Length: 242
Ligand SMILES: C[S@@+](CC[C@H](N)C(=O)[O-])C[C@H]1O[C@@H](n2cnc3c(N)ncnc32)[C@H](O)[C@@H]1O
View 1 (cartoon, protein in one colour):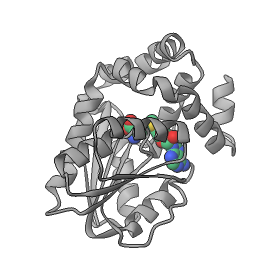
View 2: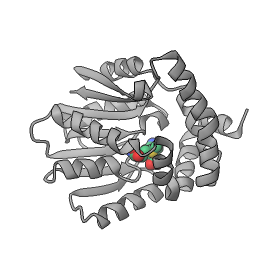
View 3: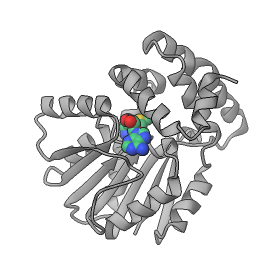
């Protein structure tokens, strides 16, 4: 059993995840581009486009587990008049988001260093809540989904993009082999951190299948939820309406 397994399955998972993201923050975007062959940019655009297709004129958005801010940047480009709050509990990641947004001269994004599992906002505050590759890292996912439901205005949209389970058996084998064998090597070479990129495939093993996540989202109160598979289910976008 690797050190990563032990840490990720104990109660100090939150601290472990936080320190892990702090350690890889500088190389996070590079590794994302390498691991997905740059495809994550299109997936994120698709996520925002699907979320917007379910809304009229959204004015306020919350991006949870923002990391380096990709989803917020895409949203602010598509809806320049929207006000976005980016939340992440890792200052190193959030600082990179701030730098990117400053360089792009974007002015409608605020930042908050906070825990997505303990959010300091009033109910019915947001038209959209987005979360990219974040939910998998949280301890109490159902509780977080319930609080997202509470923070959304009626008719508001929750858009979640994360890894999924490929539908095809052969593709599933290739996918898990890629995560088990190649990803830790990429992490070792390019982020000088093999353990962090060993955590990634491990987090996948206890993660929901697309239909399970959809059911969990519906259980927390959303009236409607569907998912869209990308790359044969390797990645999935869930869109839920309050
Ligand atoms: C895999 S990254 C995703 C970043 C970005 N959303 C993206 O799609 O590229 C996960 C992010 O979630 C953050 N995170 C993990 N647990 C968190 C928590 N409990 N509260 C807030 N942020 C958290 C990490 O610091 C990290 O920046």
